[in-house]
Length: 250
Image (cartoon, rainbow, N blue to C red; front, side, top):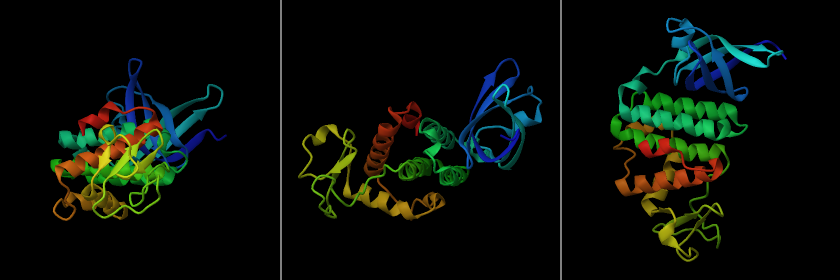
């Protein structure tokens, strides 16, 4: 294995390690999740470069004897300073990063995972506070597609019948399935998606996240937003094994 490695990378988490070093986790197009040490104190150039949500070309030195990795350089191409300017942007971006980390970087579809995460963060970087929740739901729904668990919103899993335009669906996480009103047995205890929520989720499947900054063009009411968020989170919680606390902040 070569000692000097280069990645297209996005910084997802940075934590102190010892007195002056840091441990950083990256999503890369080449290897998925990568962890490496950032050496240097507060005035280190690398320390300012390897920061949350920065994206670019990452250079890592791999020591095969110790099986350790350290960041040797990071050519940042996307800084995204706007994410830190609004609480809503920061919480949505943080929840995005945790989702990527706890779902193992999107399985093996790393280039697509990196593109989705990067496009969503670019959108959050300049988004209005009121649009951040919808942008995060967009990410969750498309992340479910990358993981291969996004359900078909037009058909009942049980009876295989097409759902009527005015029909509701309920998600049963134990079976990872959506049931129509004729097939569901305990609707009060399951996440529900309304016709309006279904239509909104189906419409955003084919757009770029940046379009959601125009809330007038892609409107959704408060109830539909909550239902879309609850459904997306229930689906991903089944993959991850639990609900992430950061989701509740968005």
